[in-house]
Length: 140
Image (cartoon, rainbow, N blue to C red):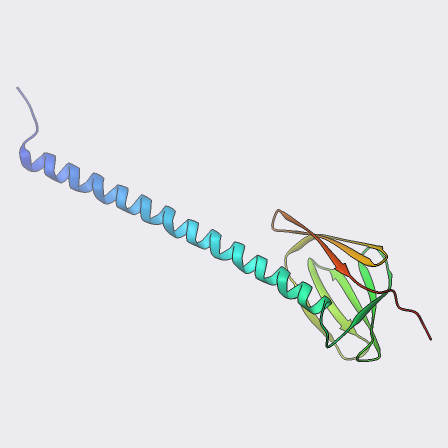
């Protein structure tokens, strides 16, 4: 009659427990990475909205097209453009370059129904629908 010895059984249990330990550790690390990416994305959206609501810039709505939002800064007394291009949303000011606001944006929609600027941002398979109170620019 052939059977396993005690040492063979202990070795088999040790190898099995080691495999389970590696699997559960990998799952834990993956969950932590996903959570970190989620929090990072939420933080990016919050910073994006903070720029739009900035007291320093005091943006007013001028007009928009499918991929461009034209704004006027009451504080800086200058025109700005928010542009969606190459999966990025950037803020441009005339001849002074641009500031990236969001990366890896799959889709960006703009709608203005006074006094609300409605933005739909599709980023990493999550859809953000944000409303920003923004006055319409009235040229003096």
